[in-house]
Image (cartoon, rainbow, N blue to C red; front, side, top):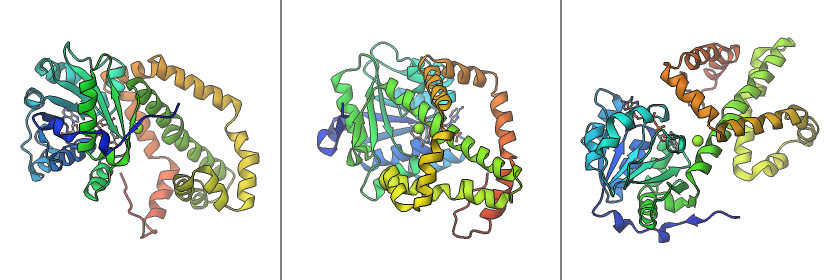
Length: 334
Ligand code: NDP
Ligand code: MG
């Protein structure tokens, strides 16, 4: 079934005229959504802890950041734009008791709502409005008169009026200029986690590392391995982005295309596909969420250790050196 998509004409910004929108967190999404809403004429208050560059940024954008509790009290719509792994604790400690019946509790990713870390009190509807792009793009496209396509989803039992307010909100951040796809919190959460685990972050990183290691172990120069297995990936992904797999195959040589058809299926095997299904099941049955929540409760020791180990991979060392030679790249070393 094709998705329902809403555009500017389906949304009425005037519904937000007498409402206050509290944006909790002034990071990637927070700074973009708060400014776009303000430029759309909405009443916005920002909840942001002091002492960080994000606090100063909010001040420099003309906001007067409040403690999270205070911003929640003022908001009719309260959008939690804090990192997913801290939302549960902050919600229970600083947000929940300051919500009033009739308020709408919002998020831009359904993880905490779907897995029971953020549960709205009685009389408060839950609503997801999620831009399908990072905050800087949500802001820059809006400033150019465009908008990043977004998702809308209602929490269980949320009213038709909440949906109308959600569409108005999406219009306020520019989302309806790009199109707002209707989904459910379950679908948004599960597909988002699956995509990042299997393809975007997990799958691609492991593929690149394994291919790099294979060439280096076989005695090829690490610089060559870096170019072939990581650097050139961007050229291919740009072709995907412009015209799908078809356009990539149209653009590369016939030799590359033949290698793709005959060798690709030997890398992504039936075993790989079965493992993808297993990962999807772990997302659906909450096993991944429980794992990630308990890892954070313990101070994320294994997460931090793995991050340290990966940072020192040979691929990163070679990459740092090569990137410094490519003056046209907007290099970001962390
Ligand atoms: P960021 O990490 O960019 O920003 C987090 C904000 O929360 C900062 O203002 C930070 O303030 C504040 N914060 C962090 N920890 C705490 C804490 N312990 N107590 C109080 N405030 C804290 O987050 P994102 O904008 O990336 O993510 C927000 C939400 O948007 C998430 O649900 C995410 O899944 C979703 N989302 C993100 C997208 C993205 O591309 N980034 C895309 C679509 C959805 P401080 O400076 O003080 O640390
Ligand atoms: Mg995502």
